Image (cartoon, rainbow, N blue to C red; front, side, top):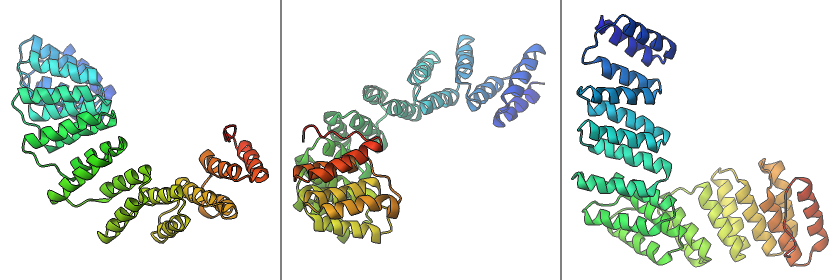
Length: 356
């Protein structure tokens, strides 16, 4: 009977047995077994489990057409699966089915919509969804705003990131560390030092301690701006706060000191990295080579180049060769520069030396 079929079909979908599920669904139809109130939901749920979202969507459309009651959970399940795939069209069709079924979009459904637009990198869609939430008198929370800010940040839309943050404050929602880090990283990408410093002070006023993400953002910002005194200040604060450094932290510090020509500080951070048992990468060693090459320590720079593969198991890349060759040409060490140029060329790297 129908109870048997409902249980059997549900079990087959749980075991991802698509062939048997399809067969017994067909048998049920051939026997004209009358469906009960649960059958449609069992079928929708089963199709979702099997990844057959179009079939699940069509079942719900058929329920609406036959004026059968549709539970929001069934629709949300289909919508969530489309969102996980980043299928905006599927999500949008489910939203329209909500309307057709006379169902209001709840907080969970709105968050599913936001998730879908975030996956697709559609900042405009996220903004529209947040406005729809307000129209439905569902107030966004900290997670909603932070998700919106991440999407806008990924698009490089700093103005909208700040607008989302300001709206959050107007709603009386207190930003958390993740929210602040999202804002700071967006401002860092825009090179907006003044506002980064402004929001760091606000973060401190809110009693939120910086974490490794915050410190890395600040180090990256000051490094890109060539403000070495600030790089050292943030590095010291990070150490005093007992915040563990990551590979990114060390790479940023070594690159900052290399660009400033401070080879001693670059070497010191390299030894700190090794003492922390963090494996140097091609980025780390290239930055160290750059530091020595900039100071005309070509013997040391070449020694590191040779050590990369043997001692660290790291393959040099075109940037590694470029920084060393360009420095040698700049300081008129032409013969050795051309030998390294040929070596890089033999490994398939294209080094542009025409401008030099």
